Amino acid sequence: MTHPERKYTIGRSPTCDIVLADDSVSRVHAELAFLEDGKLLVTDCRSTQGTSLMPHGGKVRAIRQELVSPLDTLRFGDVSMPVKELLQAIHLKYPPVVNGGTARKQAAPVAPMPPEGTGLMRCECGAVKVKNNRCEVCGL
Picture (tube, rainbow, N blue to C red):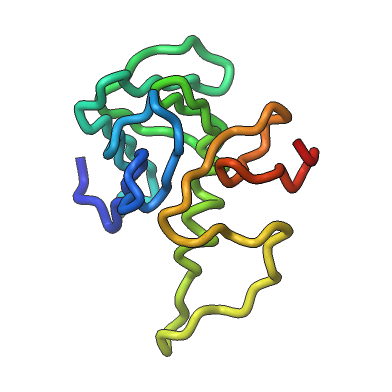
């Protein structure tokens, strides 16, 4: 495999790039890497509950390391998250940079991003929300 350009950690720890506030998620559960050729590689970091891939139109299977598509869904312990939502969370937390080192102007997200280290969880409606807060989508 090619060497990753950038890796993002996914887990329960506030030090992770993407924090999933659920007891079934390990402190550092998995890594998502952008490879030089534009592909996405997910690696399970020896998590307790494991990482599973639910490929678009395929069967659920446990993985250790796998190339994924934005159409796929990953499961970290009991938390399912579409790859597309992981990419959106990364994009909001780490906006793209243009040549001069300044962030490109972008439209504001619909819901403000929570403070760094704040736990995220899946609402009953399927949206991602800050743990112990009301959902911006359905109000639960």
